[in-house]
Image (cartoon, rainbow, N blue to C red; front, side, top):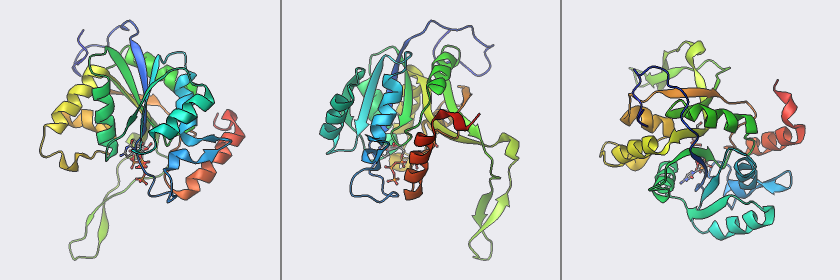
Length: 260
Ligand SMILES: Nc1ccn([C@@H]2O[C@H](COP(=O)(O)OP(=O)(O)OP(=O)(O)O)[C@@H](O)[C@H]2O)c(=O)n1
Ligand SMILES: C[C@](O)(CO)[C@H](O)COP(=O)(O)O
């Protein structure tokens, strides 16, 4: 079976496990949180948010290597934190790009020539549980692409500009049973995500080189590649706004027992 498995192929038997690289995407500035330094350097529970994210991969038996991409100007700070925390799997700390998409692309190029699986994770999600990593690595033995997601508990509405210039109006209320909220890690066999990003970056219509997530790039440029859902968790939230720092601190202090 090739790595670019078509959607129509029968469920495959598990492939042998490849090397798994956990990629921590930390190239952002955290504009919406609004601090002087990138939000991934905020301390919660005595450790920075980025240390929590790295720790999830570093402590996972399924992960062989961790690659970190950090905001330009702060790679030295991350190297200091890696040493402070005693992480053993962090191979390289590189500079991120101007957008999340550019940062992912830099990570993929840094892994050029390797035969591995990649788990692309937001540094801004400090509460990634071992169970999710285990499930993602196992799913990649059967599926070429994996999206971690949770069912939406809110009804989602789609809007469109109103016909009389009255602003956005509701144009669709999709069936909530099919609506999921995407999280990270988003996980791929390396040739799959590499091919999708190569096609995206060669496409002038890939405007501004922006995508809100990596599975979206695969769906758009390799539509025949099935993307398997692995259940995420409410705990695996993203620190996006100031209130999320408090939420993350509270969840961290509460431990892992809240959800089930
Ligand atoms: N140029 C960028 C922008 C974002 N990210 C990373 O992508 C993840 C999700 O992005 P987001 O929550 O939007 O982070 P920021 O871009 O930092 O936030 P904001 O949009 O508020 O500035 C974060 O871990 C962030 O560091 C990245 O690696 N490179
Ligand atoms: C990838 C992601 O975390 C999935 O929910 C999300 O799309 C990132 O969005 P952001 O605007 O870069 O935070």
